Length: 249
Image (cartoon, rainbow, N blue to C red; front, side):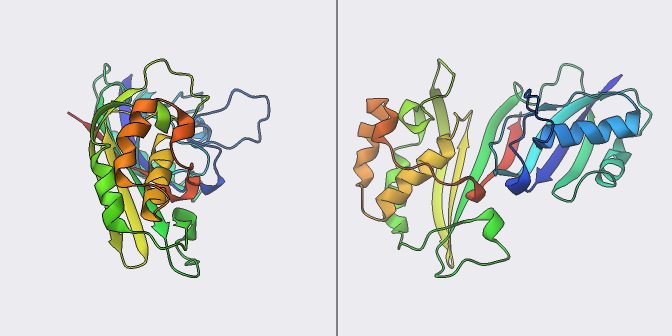
């Protein structure tokens, strides 16, 4: 057996997130279940897939990483072509490589990069709307950049995570938080050693509230210190969020 690492991209619009669901409703469509179904059609037996992390319903990925074990019937370099022939159009295998048996896509990751995009045009672009959140209020990018600086570093991000998140340790380190504009689009990029449930969408929602002057840039330290979800801003919709990259040493 050999362990295969795939880098995949997907349009999350019509998926109920990445992770396969344990519910009895077989109609729930996830990225993991679609991958496993395609692998089973190739190999003739169930093939479990392990991902670098979960993405919520409606969230996309430009470079998600997954692994599975193969008996070697298909050469490593042929896996993208073999799977892309069987996968639906909203999932694409970008590359495949063999990795050591000890490699784990989640635990060996040193950082993840997420990107959130807002379309501020008066009318949403029909060709990008599946990957952007339409928001027509004027956003002050400079104010959001000022607020973003307070988020960089090691913090307890309890205020910026879903209240129902089932984790005990909510301390994470953000290495980079960038905000910039490109025409009518405003982009937010976050690089960190890990992210909590809805964390990026809440961080972005809070920065957006700074951008429309509902909050001040220097409100961020107070929100972090409060460790209370009610102190942070709105949770932005999922369609603007993309898992951009998973980094390994």
